[in-house]
Length: 101
Image (cartoon, rainbow, N blue to C red; front, side):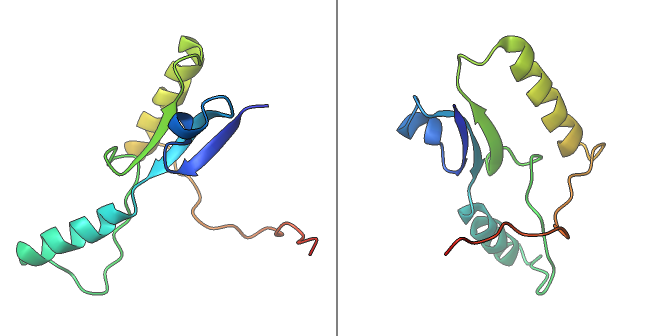
């Protein structure tokens, strides 16, 4: 069974295991804050979310063998999210997984 990795591009590291990776460049937040500071527009205490509208920082990487129709559906949904026409919840209020340890 294929998996979806996160944070880095696991499709390059373990292509036989990962069908996709939810890539997130956490360093982009530091870059943006530094740029805001240099441009004298840093708003201290302001939360600035980075999402699919910034593909250099956040994107889904899909292996080439994923069928084109599936890929196009994923890309269409990503565009809807980036355009804020579909809202993805950012908080979980449900029960957490039980820790067997």
